[in-house]
Image 1 (cartoon, rainbow, N blue to C red):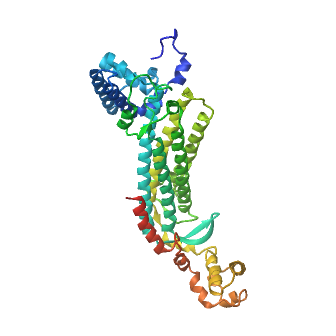
Image 2: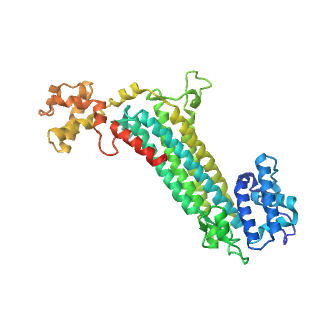
Length: 456
């Protein structure tokens, strides 16, 4: 390919570090798509003959079928996916294959492939997150009124509903999908035709190839076209944020399924056992989703470090963009699919959740709100009085609602007996009717709206 001026072959170690076919072979669809568009344009522009163009197209289509049928043999000595396909094309159609690379460099070829790959991954990820949202919305509808404790600092804070809690992750996934849409729009420009870095003297039509490949337009600057990987960084960044959301939900599921919480139970499909402890049911799937987030974060940092000091235009360092991309794409998709399965699978122990919703003075804010609303006390005063009542209840080993009216009046004489109906978890949740609040009717409306917003 490039050995005209070289008297000796590369050192064995250079050949080993230089070869990328072991991982970039998964770009075969994108590489063939780019080559098909380029070949059609070359013939259309009369840069190559119509006969050579047709032969190249037919040959590439034949190679695609061979790869997809598993009959194609990838050769490490041919370095990468581009040269493997070009060599196979030459075996098929002879000299005409050498004309395919007219007005093109591996620099614009590879970045075209990678942009097409990332675009395909973004589309698949959006589809996967939509399925996850559908699963979360379904469970939220089932549990619009199922009480559970809400937490801050992992301490019981106020009662909420399980449906409300699950809808929080629907919103997070919605923002993940909006980042996907934004990233897709920005990457959807074609670098093909930028050649090595300066463009080409051949009368190519970059608008034609861009349209053939589904891009909105060709990239405006040939240097930028081959040098930029911000589209890859943006994918890795949104992937890392998405992994954070998945990991947080996984962490909660791990906690909820423990004996100490007892809120949910995974079926055998999403649990494993222990080699020594026969009673164990381990939430391994959720733990692996949580664990894989670390490598997804690392992939972003890896490519940031690779790109941070590279001069324009192409540098061989940029070959290192692919493995982090592939790793994030594959692991993130597995995590999304696994989380979708777990969300649809877990059984809810409603009685235990509802019991926990009333523990640890979760109704203290309701008491303070009642004092401010009914007795017209400044909220700071109401907060202070409630804190003293919590201290009194703690000393007596009772819940707030188990104090007598006389007990409460020792702290605030104006308290009336109509406070007690307000101190149940169900009453607390039902009162949270502000927009975005956890009241069951709010949750039911939010489920309806989420379906309209996200599941069109």
